[in-house]
Length: 199
Image 1 (cartoon, helix red, strand yellow):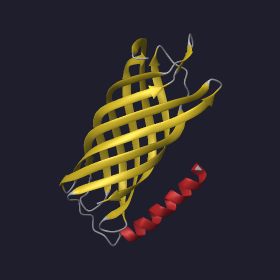
Image 2 (tube, rainbow, N blue to C red):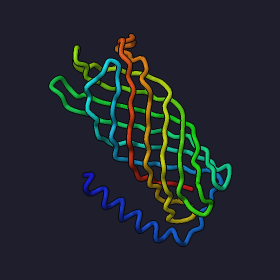
Image 3 (cartoon, rainbow, N blue to C red):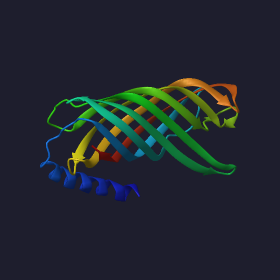
Image 4 (cartoon, rainbow, N blue to C red):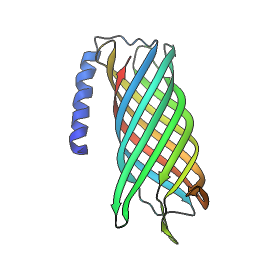
């Protein structure tokens, strides 16, 4: 699927980029973006866990408001989902980031942006520990997102947004059935995605 998706994304970006030459970027009012990405996620644990990185889809929803020609404030949600069949059932990772941040456009007449956001995370995962095997754990803590992207306008009202993000959460108390498991769990996600934006 990813082999077909990458050329399709490249073709869409090239076509929309050609059409975008007819539009002068104007950033005012509200913006909404709905995106889907291809991601690589990893866990980090104390004591050390042996879970390999996993690939899966990431879904992004962002609402933003322009406060200046080169600055937009945003509320964003990113959700990573992955399921791996095992002998005892399905082992799933569900990682969620909800952040408040800003998109900065270095040039007023271009749609390239740099993004930073801080907020909260909810992690549900099953890391593998040497002494006890896989355990279903969950945790909540602060989260951070750093990213870059570019809007490709198809008209004055809508377009495509290509983006690349790094999402991270520190190691925090990991709970097993609402009790402290004694372990700490954190995560990170590398994400490349394509969104539909309404300006």
